[in-house]
Image 1 (cartoon, rainbow, N blue to C red):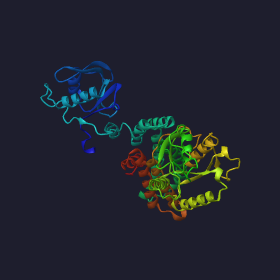
Image 2: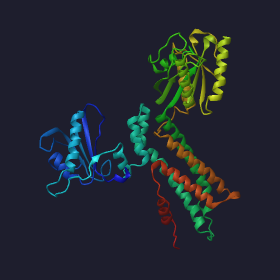
Image 3: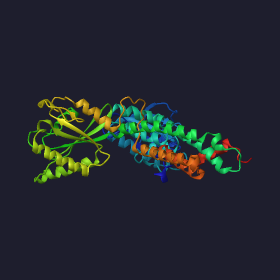
Image 4: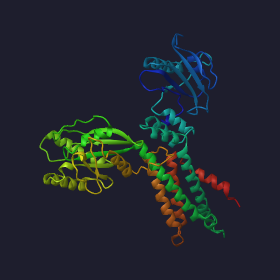
Length: 468
């Protein structure tokens, strides 16, 4: 896509299917000849004009609104022409085909193609051009896709904050503080003969401590944002007839899984996405874990173990009415041993005892007692799921983030920890300190898509009299 970034592009900008309005968008340089061919007239900038969209033989394809956004004041930073027609798929395909046809035709005034090289845009190419033309940074570009894909109201609001630049501003604040710290370190390296101790003069240790504190705050909010976007995968597992499918139905508020008293009813994985306080939760019901000679059930059990290995949290569901049954206890103990071998260390385990409405005895300490039939105890399970996921209900102003953002900030943290060690008086190593700070800045730049080392040089030359 980078090799053809200057080609004019066109695409249908609205979702497939029928609708009241559909949009065809064109982006490129010098769109006036194409505008004349499609609209029969010039258009005023950023002013909607109602007119017919004409075919090559001057017949009318449709009538609608045309809007022209001259560069650089457009979404992509290039000239943009939007044709808003009726939202029928055939109409929009005809209009797109007409755009491509008109772009390749010769302009009578110049004798050259109206818009040479006009082609159908690739997925995400309009937003990619907005990023390449410095209209948005990489985090904002990702927020556009996240806003479209948001599955909860909280996720949509957080994606909107990211798109508005809240997350990017926090990253820029961290980066600017890191650059300022690097200035002092680089100055000490470049001018070792100077009597002035730049590190003490600029309070390098204090700057680094404040930077690490700022980073910790940003990391905490970013983890919350990543949780809003990615959600958590929760697997319900346990022996047959413990009520796993009933619990899935209770959490989802709908009869999704078949529930019968026959052991082994669930043969395959059943997944349902729900939300708890705006956090997406992907709940997965699995086949009962037991030894089975049924080949179909065995496949279901294998798939259950595969889901457990990929989960973020495991709800190990027990049957409270069979708690005192020796055979049931033995089977539970066997599953526990298998879990100890197969469960990833990062997988949170939640012990839950179902059928509390049919048994008066308490559940073991540290576990949750509930009734999937009556709903008793479901709210406690929901709170526990959010707790193991790390969600803080009081979190406000969270921006939507991705796992790559979390990983990048973790690398920044690692580099700052190493920098703190090299800044200590007993182990002072300026060259290694400078390298760790540089790597930390690079990791920050990955988030917003800024990779230029010239930024640091520009700050240094503006702050220090190098030629003196």
